Structure formats: C-alpha cells, structure tokens
Image (cartoon, rainbow, N blue to C red):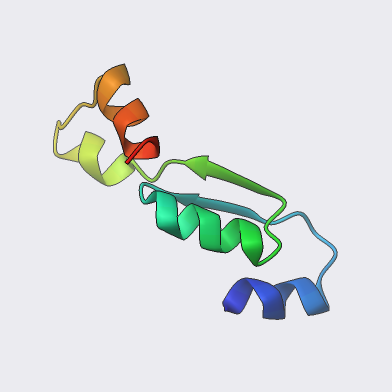
Length: 61
C-alpha cells in the first residue's frame, strides 16, 4: 500500500479520508496517523446532502 511507502520516507503525519469504512481500516493498519470519514466535497457540488444518521450508518455497516 502507498501509505507504507510514504511512511518509510517521511515523518510527516498522514491523514486518510474516505467515505468507505473498509478503506479507513486499511489505512489505519498501514500506519496512517489519523483517519476521517470525508471526501464529501463531490457530493456537495451536486447539492447532495447527508443527514447525521446517514453518516453514522456509513460507520456501522
């Protein structure tokens, strides 16, 4: 995974962002310093809004 390669050459903190929980878990296991549910910008541009419940449901799949 790319994160492991970056970790070997950099001491900068790495933050991974995704709307997919499986991706976030993989990034955490690959030594990301922090992970967040995100990347919603593309949806906002299309005027698609998410409720709090929908966001929480992404985590608890």
